[in-house]
Image (tube, rainbow, N blue to C red; front, side, top):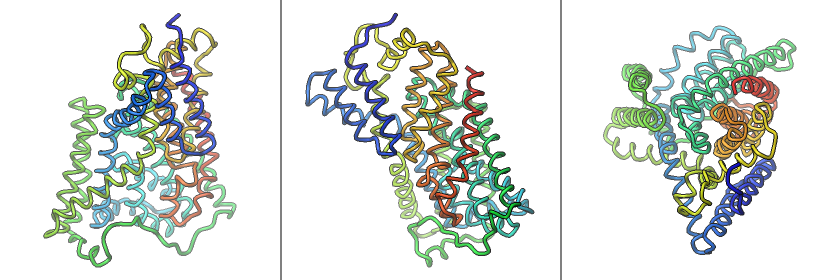
Length: 469
């Protein structure tokens, strides 16, 4: 039957529901999470000052858990900015421009290249790396800018980010919320990411070219490509351009180094933090090497400058995630780390206890659990970050898996896929702005065009997940 629930469990459940409601209203949840941590601490310790300390200690615990993810994304961003300003990225993608000989090939080539680069560089930097080079080529073969935006968006912020197989930022967050190894989430997400990716990109392709044939989606004659801001002036940018020979050398070296990383990860069976460390160290090595050749006399200062830019980006992205993750870590191992062993005897953590209670009071099955995971994941994505609520997704998956007795990895992966596709940059207008800005299209129109394919994909993927439970 499990232990009897006490006030801590009900307060935790109340704040989970409150966070979902606030996310559904598209408001920020950081304050709700901080209040939740304080209330749980107050009930647990019966001390105001210890509850206040609990807020700060909870944030420290979350930062410790997330630091590897924040740092890898910061390093990748720093490296990407250097590749962009030095002209190496243009040389790297130039071979793919020769494959683009028509609008159909343009859609698939741009999408697949975006997906591959996003696995290693993350989608936001990848947009800047690819947009300036491939957009003019696509327009030349008569693929409208909206088609380019859809392809980059769905393959990058959708397929690549929802799986996040290389950098492993997303699965680390969801695995932390569910209290399971990162490798379990990655393995369970592979079939779901494939199904979601195929259904969504083919549906978007069909709708896009149907509108092109109907002449309701017209080709732009001229377009202004907006680049990401960098910390260098135009004169400095000219000085930073490498010789063609060096650009070619680095354009070969960069992908080769990352391919070697993948081989090493497979041979040495590296996963989670170890795999992230290998990718991060390689990216930092590339940043240092490229900066030395690009800036010559000022390389030391520019390495630091790029690293700071990367850290600013990393903390800007994960700033809203930290208080939310701090709250959801309380549902598992984080509670004892922050407040000590004060849960009732026999307790396996707040989330586990709620799951056992749910299993004994509410008739649940795989279908209900899968649909709920998808809906909760989609709701957590409504804030437009995709990452802020996926700790909640892991906690909900753990709760339901305890109730039905199976499927924690699949439910966690399903919620992750739903959260990232909705909030990671395909459906929320303020989340698609980077792609829309690069392609010169209206972000609201891009989000509307993505809506039908993504909803179809989520429905099909949820059905597949039910059979995998």
